[in-house]
Length: 77
Image (cartoon, rainbow, N blue to C red; front, side, top):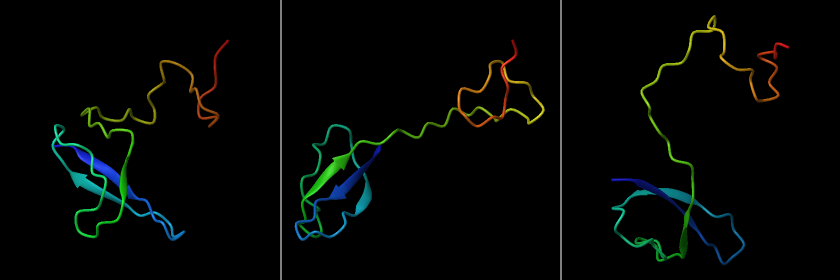
């Protein structure tokens, strides 16, 4: 069963609060918190995928230069 992230929609100017809920995919998204009755909305988040792949050892050479500005790899010309 997937976990969904919800966020409260405060009407008093306070900061919204986030919480997770295990919920069947077939269920409709909540519009109110079941315990407090406060209005909520579902927040779209990136899924956490466990591919089972292990991280490469630090001495392993990358197959392509790093695409970020981290400077950890240099492009070879």
